[in-house]
Image (cartoon, rainbow, N blue to C red):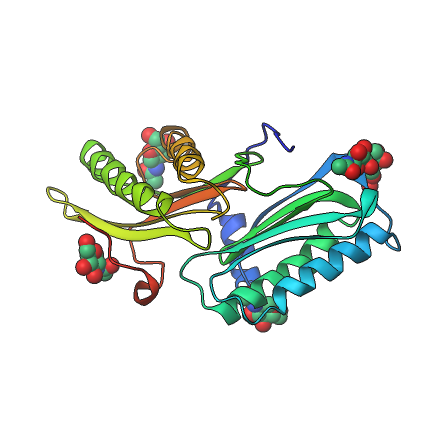
Length: 257
Ligand SMILES: *[C@@H]1O[C@H](CO)[C@@H](O)[C@H](O)[C@H]1NC(C)=O
Ligand SMILES: *[C@@H]1O[C@H](CO)[C@@H](O)[C@H](O)[C@H]1NC(C)=O
Ligand SMILES: *[C@@H]1O[C@H](CO)[C@@H](O)[C@H](O)[C@H]1NC(C)=O
Ligand SMILES: *[C@@H]1O[C@H](CO)[C@@H](O)[C@H](O)[C@H]1NC(C)=O
Ligand SMILES: *[C@@H]1O[C@H](CO)[C@@H](O)[C@H](O)[C@H]1NC(C)=O
């Protein structure tokens, strides 16, 4: 299993903003990892053709409208396993397009690693030569933040933690197709509104999902202290918060109070 202690700090430096603008025309590639010590394959191997068959079955599956794809293909040492998860507010067509793009880009970035991961704003794709279903994987993970600081840190943290706590409880209760929640809250004194979403791969149990997200939000003081926006992204779960709405409000279900 991939348990790399890798974490990457991506902040919005001028260079990064420049890169962001350049890549924005297509999609927003956030991060990728090629796992170097879990096996290699060659371009004409059975593993590679199994992997390609598997992932193209995801992006061509028009019956799936909930944005979570898992499967395996092939036999014995050439068997490939993959998971793809789209952000819970993304439309099925956007989701499939994102998976298709991810697989093309990842096969260029990691041309012969049997295990690899890629994240876009809209979707995540990972694969390996061993089973990756129903298990909580927190690594490899990364974080990002918005460098603008909030004015009242204590109040902001209190309101943010309460919001994320509600979202985690709601998302973890989701079924095997969807574990996702989004919502907003306002810090009264500073009149600062924040918008947040949390999501797990829905193959996790309720407990695994809340463990994963709680592990992610524990990193807030490290990654995103004082920041008006931030996210922590891992293979099994992710959260993000911003001061402006960044998700599709129409596709999120109302949260219980
Ligand atoms: C995955 O590939 C590595 C390296 O080729 C190999 O050592 C390992 O046994 C494979 N895992 C499985 C489950 O086949
Ligand atoms: C896999 O390939 C990379 C370069 O592409 C190489 O550095 C690494 O040693 C190889 N690993 C194995 C187990 O062959
Ligand atoms: C996939 O890539 C194509 C071509 O670069 C682009 O037009 C499209 O918007 C991308 N899809 C997504 C969901 O980003
Ligand atoms: C925000 O706060 C951090 C931590 O105190 C500080 O290092 C950084 O310079 C501040 N950023 C701005 C834009 O004020
Ligand atoms: C903010 O959340 C409330 C429920 O807490 C919801 O009614 C409202 O539509 C949300 N507003 C925005 C802009 O997300």
